[in-house]
Length: 116
Image (cartoon, rainbow, N blue to C red):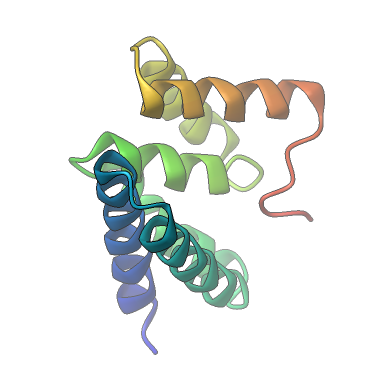
């Protein structure tokens, strides 16, 4: 599968998970979370090329997609990912809260979405 297709799967499933959460459908939301996690695992299997491919989502029009991509790219693209998360964290609501938590875990040293 092409890297671009995996990036698209990641973005689509993040957006679908958010939409399912807003509808109160945890079962469907969890399915989408597993799907974007699987897409990231496949990207990560390509090493830095896979991570670099995911970085295009740091400019995605949807904040939830930008934040999730940034959370997964903190180790690989630290400055860019932190900038996305810090911008989102200034807001209020579920997505900004997620950005705040990702930054907190990073600063604590407990972040582990893409271990070295």
